Length: 313
Image (cartoon, rainbow, N blue to C red; front, top):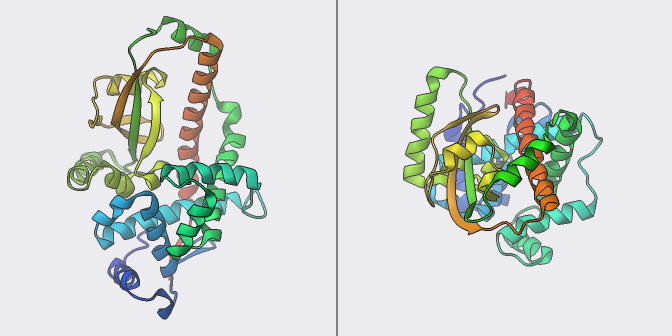
């Protein structure tokens, strides 16, 4: 049935609490619900929470129900993407060189220096390496699928980009380390209530945990963190909203095609352009291309999510 797949939230939360403190193998693995043909079990929930904690230790500050919601949302994103991907390919598989590049990006973020150390850590924490490799493979194949579907719709005005670069100042430019929360509401009347809840959670648990709970973006799984971005590369609407933000401050919601966006400035540094026009144009084209692909990715995901059938078991 469609709708609230967690009407028995207290039961699942209780199971999670047990599994956190007891021997996992001593308990039966229960199927909780299905997303089309993809099943999700108690052990899936258990492992997802543990996996997310590797990249977001602040999850430990949340209660069991909040951890469950975060885990549920993360699994749902992966399962919906997997279901859609399997409409185009026979299996979830990518070349090792691409998977290794992504794995290196992931483990470097949490200060591991080799894939061996990272995988040993996963084994020590009772995490299934095969399933984690599949999660990252899903991410790679999904990104490629989005590119194949929407590449022809990307709109880049190279002349305008060249003028932007030539006209902007060359000194005292800001590079921002930013995080995001992207949220949607089904009705305009629900906006204030949703926004107030997000503000409350930011105040109580911090921006990263609020992103884990509320954000519908893929960046939610890493606490909304995006990385370092040159402020002048942001589109004009977003740049205007963040131009006065200092380190630690966040914007009011910005309406975008894929939802309402809240941006937090994690850190700021100044830079000067070592001017090479061709390089600057190439970098800005790549940034704007990725920006548009990310928007298409969210729109595509929201579209297919509407047609997914949830079955509580």
